[in-house]
Every structure is written in C-alpha cells, then in structure tokens.
Image (cartoon, rainbow, N blue to C red; front, side, top):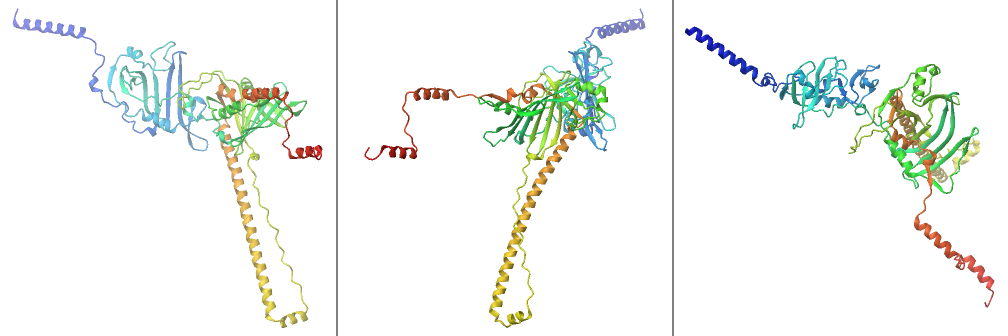
Length: 551
C-alpha cells in the first residue's frame, strides 16, 4: 500500500471515529447559550407609562378553558381617555397606577440562562401557549401569556410565563410566543392580577358608618301578573353615635286593608342593637364582586321608560335575577321581591338598595384585606343601587329675629309766632335739644349696627345651609353617575347582614341573673315584713295630728 492510500485510510478512520463520538455524545440542551445570556428580552421597552393596554390569558386546567382578562385605556364620548375592562363590558377601571406597576415589573428582563430549545419540553417548563385555537382539553403545562401595547396598538411586549425555577426564588421559565427557546429570567408576577375586583374601586357605596343617620327596612313583594307592588311592612330607625341609646325606633308599621297600621312593640322586646350594628358595618363592607350592564330604558333612579316592558329579553333577564317592573302610585320602577333597604346619611344622600336572587356563574370574592388570609367562596347575589337627595336630615338654620325698625317722628309745621318766640329764647334750651338729638342719633346708629349684625349672621347661616344642600346634591349626582349604567354582584354573606326581617330587628329582653334573684328575694321578704315608715314629711305630720295631745 503506497503512502497516499495509507493517508486516505487514516483520514477515513478518523472521520468514522469523529462521527461515532458526535452521535453518541449527550445532547446539549441549548444552542450557543453564551451568545444569549445577559441579553434583554425587550430592549425597546423602557417606559412603563407607555403601556395603555394589557391582556393576560390564563388556562384553567380544572375547567379546561382559556380565560382572557384585559384592561385598556379608551376614548370616551366626551373625548377623554379612561381606563376600562373590556372583558366586563368596559366597566371603569382604577388601573393607571396598577398597570404602570405591572409594566415596570416586566421592564429590563434579561436572559439568565437558556433552559431548552426543544418544543417537546414546553409542557415540562409550563410554557405552552394558552391559545384557545390550539390548546386542547385536558392540556397541562400551559403558561400565562402577557401582552402589552401602546396607544397606537403597537406591541411593546408579549411573553409566556411558566413554572418557577426550583430552588431559585423569583426566577421563572419564560418563552416568547412563536419561539421554541425557553429562558430563565427574574420576572415579577404579583401585579399581573386577573381578578376583576383587583382592578376596580371595590367599595360600592363609599360611605362612612359615622355619617349614617336613618334606616328604612321595607318589606314588599311584586305581583308579577298585575305588575303591582304589594306592601307588607316598614321599620324606620334613627342612629346617633353620640346618643344613649344610639339606636331609636321611629316607626314600625304593617300594611293592612289599604292603610298603614302601627305595630306596638311588646313589653318584653327591645331593639337588637348587635344585629343593627352588624347591618351598619355591612353597608360599609359592601364590596363589588362582579358587574352587569343595565338594559337600556332604566334610569339612574331605577325608573323605567314607558316602552321598557316591550324589551322582552331585558324583562325576562331581570326577572330571572329577581327584579320586576311594577307600579307604585304614579311611579313605574324596578323593584325586587326581596324588598329594599334605604340608608340616609347626614349629608342628605339617601342610598336605595334593592336586592335580587342568587347570582349563578359569577366571580367570587378573593380579596385579602387587613391581614385576612381567608378566601370567600360563598354565594353571591344581585343588587341594584340608586341615590336620592333628602334634605330633611340637614338641620335648617335658626335665624335670630330682627328688631323692629323705629320710625322717625314727623316734624309738624309751627306758626310764625312760635318760631319767633323760640328764637328769642336763651341758648341753653337749644343746647339741651341738641344733646337729645345726638343721643337719639347714637341710639339709632347702635340699633342699625345691631340690625346689620343680625342680618349678616342670618345670611351666614343661610349660606352654610345652602352649601350643605349643594354638597349633598352634588354627591348624589356623582354617585348616580357611577351607578347609572350598572347593577352589581355582591357577597350573599354581606346581604344576609343587611337584609333584616322583623325577627332580626327585635329580640327578647334579657334580665341579669343577679337582678332576677334580687326580685325574688324582695318578693319573699315583702310578704312577712310590716309596712315601712314613710319618709314623706307630710305623712309624718298627718300621723302626729291623729295621735292628739298627750299621746
């Protein structure tokens, strides 16, 4: 074998060995990882305030369904831009700061490592795209896709967030949609909330319990066939946080044979202040769980348009949720079979709450406040809210009475002889008249000044009253603007505390055990003792007279 042939044999053998080594070596999980480490995932995204919309898509493995949530800034009819939630009929969102925080948590993301570039391993890292077109029933390892855009609709970032990296707190596996490579990066997900209630003003009534002054608990039902309201009973209560007692019963009536009749409180019953205090606190704790858009034709004060009953779909939908259009006098409104609760504030704002049936298929409250780690998973209920202005609760000004105006006596014409005689009198009487005139003038000035003071003080009182009335009216307008397009889903647990029956409002009087024992002892001792001498001095005097002298 010549040298050339030997060389060719050696080259071939080397090639075979190299091939065997390449085929049998362990597969590398990454390709050129050193070229990607430290690179920014979204190098152009450097301003969190540029994000004007965010969509978060999750996959519920238990229900095998994709759940999208979106919050966005949109232009209103008056040309302003506001935050809203498209997935909930564009309900107003309190989102500006929260979206900026969420966007800030996505800024500056760097590739720390390349975990895989194999599509077959996406499920293992939890980065399968939650695309409703491709994800299958029973799928596992589906991630959460986050997409943010600016005001022009340009995509600022889109990322699929997967499982946490084991043993590395704060690190997660992520993937860019449409790409195979799986990275590890430090991403904050605490601001990526998909619960509706986390993006809104949850406090429904926005009231302070210190300002509550009066409650009406109205029990009525709706005759669905006649479209009429059936009155049953009404309890009116006053509340004064400085009073003793704080709760006072103003009225307890029931409707009988076409008129209201007072219901006397039995001697052995009293107000259940514990239940009433719970009601008061529950009004403050009334949180929005979900919302529904009102059908067209219902005003902010729940009055129905003349043609509203022609909207069959709306009427049937509301009836299925416990609300019916009914007539009360000359008013046609939306009422509920659960009656209503009215709450009057010291500002004159009067809340009208009409509760419906149990809400099926609605979101449940999962908020955690004030260190409460419990999650409410109970039932929810529908609620309509409206506001009215009631000036009766605002104290009217007490004006100081103005003093009567003094009339100046008219000067009588004097005969010429009298004027001549007066002119011949000495100067001393003239000086006396001048002093009298000065005194009268001074008294008149003082009276005028006092009258002016009273007028100014009365006007100040009137202005203060008018200002309170205006503030109350403005507050009602503000609240009704918030309530006008919506009705709500609230916790049934809170409803049960607010919707009290008469049996809840009153309770049996409770006597202290020691008091009962004392009463029993006094009753037993009273049967054996002689009548005690009277401390009344008149009784003693009468006894002395009857005894006569010398006795």
